[in-house]
Length: 111
Image (tube, rainbow, N blue to C red; front, side, top):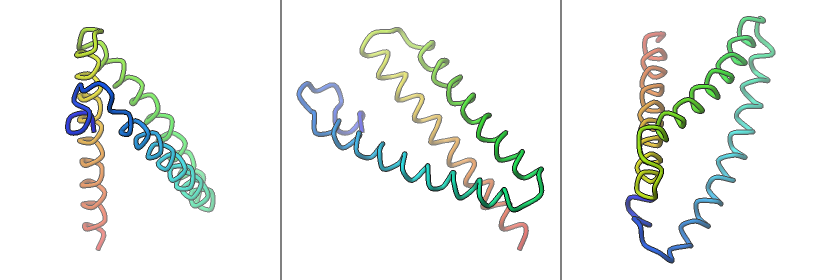
């Protein structure tokens, strides 16, 4: 959104409102999915619940480390912060695509 819509222009505030609404929607969706995954794992043997909780904890640590690293790479001015945020989101999207591909491959190999 920053690259294509805001791109350093002053006074573009509707994009911020859209972003806040979308972040709220994603948070609500995440709460439903997390509850469903935990509920499904609770009906399985203990190792699945342990894997679910460990995966959630590891993802939180990895996201925090990623943000610290991307902020450390660039200077702490407006341009550097924008570039570090873009790097963070590019890396995050690449990881989501990789995880999706690995999941699709695992599902395909089962069939």
